[in-house]
Length: 383
View 1 (cartoon, rainbow, N blue to C red):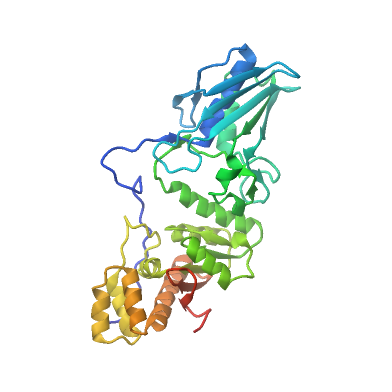
View 2: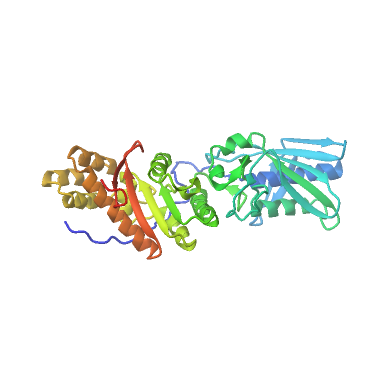
């Protein structure tokens, strides 16, 4: 069997990453819920009557109504109103589902809107997010939505309003996100570009991968380490202990998106650390490796087996393997894991170099399925 360079492919995902017999419910972003809470609180502050529901506009122009879970007025020491909207993420497995997006509102001297973050909303500590360092992690679209919603109640050219967004328990929720790595501490981010959460959409993961590369670049780092998940990240950190945490990016299926961002941000090096299945897909030229859009090319693994010195029986067994992991186990049992794994890593390196162009150096490592041991590499970590 001879090696021929595979075509490079970065297939699109379906609208949802899971297929179900019934439609999945959409939900609302933290930004939309914060906007509704802010409008409810300003309405109560102005009229003295807490509303049971409010209507807000989404960026695309659609008008939607939110129930107000709680709205309280306080007269002293200064008039304030506080409103709560409970986030419904629909059928999306969102860590902020059920969060109480809270807006506390009061008058301020001079016209205009002052927006601040309270308890449970993260503080930005690193550049590269498009937000001021030291300010609240409230993204641009939610900021605009809140401003527009408040302006529907009061004339901000004449009146000054201060809105503080908080999320009880937000600091705990943030532990299940990538916020700390991005330099957002103390809570969650107030996010959303459309106001709507699409269930099981992987668009947010892809965006977070690209954003992580941008944050890295903004801090002057020039080597990005792409890991497929938590176990491979742990292995990557052991291989490259000299690199700061921000350099390690969990790409999942979005290797192509991460490499494209790295090229755009003038990175000089990419290291990919993965397990056999993802590496086999990448070696076949597939840059987006979700199971619905790609499968392991066993003919490629058979060719690697032969090149590594495997006999005809082993090649046949690999060609009939159930999964990439099965092929890995066959190599291991035959004592060919290191040579076959090194060849596979080198093929991935060649694919990523073709995809990235000459600007980036590329190194590839394969780890075992516990993430505890390096088993092969494209040359940076020799046997």
